[in-house]
Image (tube, rainbow over all chains, first blue to last red):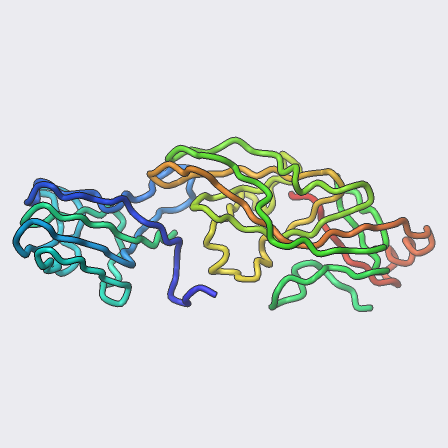
Length: 121
Length: 184
């Protein structure tokens, strides 16, 4: 039986390669479903995050919404050590409910990021 | 034998809605047909329909579920779920939604396993070869390569009841299981 705390459908987001650094170069971690045939709105929560940093130096990963000057950080930034895979599980991440596309960027490229999402609604 | 109603049996895994020699009344085309169960058999979980690929933000065509058809004088009791991240409408027959409210037709998605692990709320019945239709909706912003549906349940073979028994059932003096093999 699924965990009690599961509220929605869990799916994997795309593999995002952040080949350029800075807030002007955000990647789209998850697109919110907004199909008119769906009754009600859909939100998303990150349940797992898999990242790797091969930029040559340790860096920061920022997760939020929007891009460029419109980027709004949604949770504390994550430290990515150089040459290390990191795996943040459900209990390591805050229960931020996203109602807009989830975006991310790093201070140093290149990094790869992939999220497992719980779609709610 | 107590009077039984589908969906009434409460918690627990799926059970047959009637047993051998139980009376059943099957609703199809807004007519009740009174029968008696001669024998029944279990249908294990199996993939009965793949709605195929559905593009992002698209509603697919309704597809006949021919694999749920049965022979004459048979009815099926099915519970089902969606494996993939699609929302699915059930029609029985083609123009009648299951379930259906006044203003909308609720859809099923893979969330039902979380909300209703024993799938009580997905239960529907098929009378003979009056197959249902399923229609997939991909509400996500990515394409679905497939939309697979799985069901499980029971198959019943029934026989005619004497007219006197039918009158007793209609008068409420004999027990009967009422099976609605159509939507609203």
